[in-house]
Length: 143
Image (cartoon, rainbow, N blue to C red; front, top):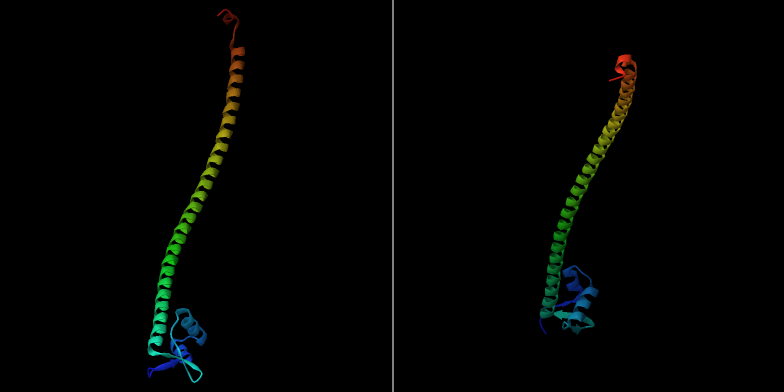
């Protein structure tokens, strides 16, 4: 047996975790242990394996965090683009509404002018008929 041995508690304290987690790693990965005076101890090679497990786990977590940050940045970019498109759509809808109101006002104005023109045309026709009746003299009947 090697001189440098650590208990599960000592290793857990060193790695900033708890004994249960270290025990699960030992069981899951079949890491060799020894029992000295009713305490489970780990030799240097077992300690190295557990440290490597934590190192790999930390790297995986860092990679996962990096991937998630990248995806979050993409999502943020998409949200920003969608927000800009929504804003643009709302501005266009407002412009369309203003144009429709202008066209409606212009149409109403044209309808009013048309009615005035029809009234004037009727008045002119009536005036022409009146002029035709009054202006005929006795000698124009044979024409």
